[in-house]
Length: 80
Image (cartoon, rainbow, N blue to C red; front, top):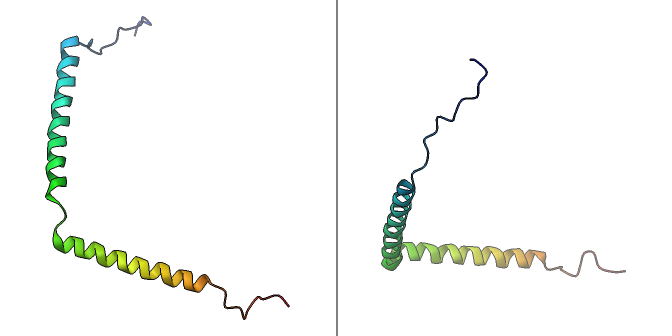
């Protein structure tokens, strides 16, 4: 190398390319939004909803048991 600074090999951005890229991004965004809107409107299948209900029940029972275990019995640790 001769010590002279070399200009960047990076191509200069073209405003038309930037506009085209933004338009592609918008198109992708619209398609994704349509896809997800359709998916949300399908709802949850009955069997999956039943499994979610069973999970909620199990968590409620576990939370209730934990709360019962945390309640002092009055026999231990009381003031004398």
